[in-house]
Image 1 (cartoon, rainbow, N blue to C red):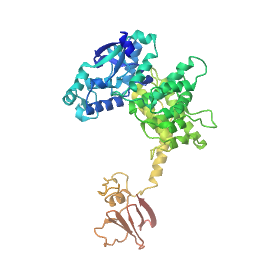
Image 2: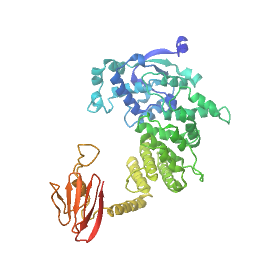
Image 3: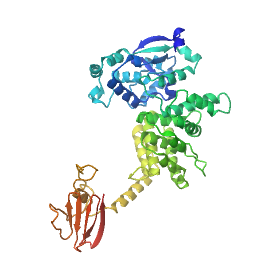
Image 4: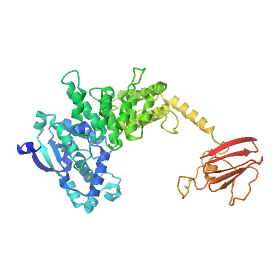
Length: 497
């Protein structure tokens, strides 16, 4: 940059935030993460604004392609970043991109979680100015940018990648390089090297990828294997779709590590179909939710192949369904969130990580179809409806068989107060007894009071059942007991934990 400035190629200009977009090369094509923008904004307010900490570099915009890329990027943030008027984007940032987007958010008064910076839930320039006048000044007048002419990048197209990488590792007020950015960089580098010949040298790709010293260096070999096998090919369609979902859903600070990327990049033995969609579903679960390498390894077991194939087929079929609708594409921002949620639910349910979830994969697929109907306004036929109803019926019968049917479901639950001593124990065990549908119980005010007949005697965290047979069991903390129902003349076992 110094040489370019000395040669007079680069000029310094103070630019208002509204006219500076994001360059498509920013963060190796990943762009800005809206959650990171809002986190950075809060951090700046906490530590105070400093112009010296911002090294802003941008380039003149010479094509509508850059403007359209920015429009799509902002549209995919669910309103967390303000939209651009197409003609307004005159420059595109290579560094300080998140910082400039934070200034745009303040000016556009977008919604923000920190009420100390907001009025009626939206960012307030005046409120922020009362805390930090310099920050208000930056929002109003903008940053001072080192501006590159568009012709320079046309002549040296790799310059944008070099400058943005230098900005990310310079230690300024910015977000450091994250894993998905490095994954995208590896794909970009592979494309560059592939132009030189049919054989791409991983050593050379790795050397270039690690030039900026990203913190995820140990995972790079497995990331590289993942993009070769499962990114979707030279256009990286699958990778870009996963990036869009993660970017719109959570921050980019999470690190999966080499163990998880190793599993995601490992082929499943005994099958030609490597379930690429399912792998990207796991990638989404890992970044947006929680997934360990041990959980992910389940996909490598032969006993899981049939279940994974069923889930993967649904992921493929729903996207084909969207693409068959007039003017619709599964890559459209309208569908990314719905299809991403479908992927995550199918993956966690298939691997048994979803907890107690109503229904199965057909129910999840049918719910997705309903969401697609609402988005498109089209009465889309659902091939999963019958199976979803059957799953719901089976789940309802299974649940009913495990509970006391003498009382209806509604009205049984009460607020569970937690014991003040901590540990998560319920303060009054009788609440749990009521929820299980037992009747004929009474609360004993003293340890010496005796029950009769079918009484359940409760002492704060202890419970005792006095049945007609005289059998008695007293418990503590985890309440496990027998109730003798004289009318039905059978014993019911119940456990409260």
